[in-house]
Image 1 (cartoon, rainbow, N blue to C red):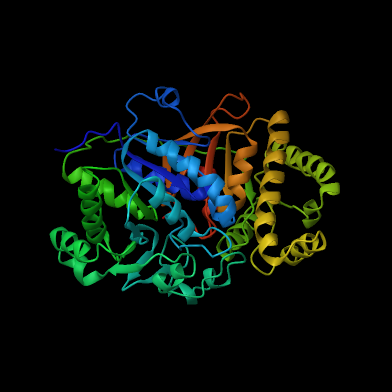
Image 2: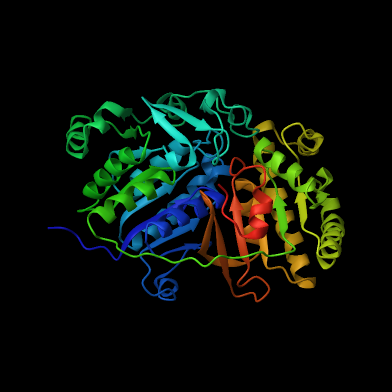
Length: 462
């Protein structure tokens, strides 16, 4: 007999921008979803009548395995208590991870224990974002919109040079094997092309495996994967790992079975000037967006790397906030950035500051995101005390997680789609300065060169 579930899905996002990515695709599928920034209880869900899915925005992508244990055990237990059909550990579609930071293998070990599940299923592909998995190998388009060239992930111009988790292996089975001792196998394209029943039979033949990857190249493959996951979750909560392609896959399957039939109408958000952009990203995609915006009337403020040193933080926060306040009061769209692209000298300066404080290379990579994120969040708080801001754009997944935490946001709801994986959201907070803010969170690889202009105008990014 089919089990009844209070929620269709609960997910944990390993960074903030990834969490809003999943929020978008659930909402677009017709599933009323709320993204929480702290562990929710039943009373919290009751504030949102008709809620069908919840997310928990996390930071595990920038954590060590030890830190992940402290983070994920209680997070997964919280989600489990709501008894959803599906629990999804949402990771970046480029599978950013390493043994020492954002270890997806560690997350799987914790999830399989909490949910008492021998085999964990992983669906990395997200064709809607230009991410594809073929015979275990991951491919990614340069950027998530437009006609950017598609690269094998270990040859991707940006991801192969990522400052924290550079992609050096395209076969995700080999990549993940560096992070866990669990046995790994694959449901390949040929099997998925054969349909849901064949995939389910193949899973039975591999039932001794502890991790199963799923290939995926198009929406038809996602639909099959969604049908498989829905079938497996009928009797017991199913724990899965993957990109927002998991949300799209399940949405396709639930729509097919008429489990969901909602449609949401989104009003055009319109222009919101002046726009405040907060960038903690060193991605070349974001770098080109900053340069394009500066060439088209935006004002730029460079956050100096000396904020890494505690002695400089208080004064730097005050000085930078004052600059931003002045520009916003003059009606100027303003970008605060920690770097412009991968060659910015501030990246090396930041590493040197942290190195002098006694941190090793691995610790430097994690601490820079934390410190920059918290400083950026504190700057925003000071700005909001002095000037009315309608819309803020955050660029950079790791730093935005920490910046958002500083703002006291309780939850987010989607307002409108802007770019695939980066919707416009409404902040829900007990702080009147923050409550109702329009926020857009984009990962480093998201968007075309005119992205900031589009968000300013509230227009969709093609």
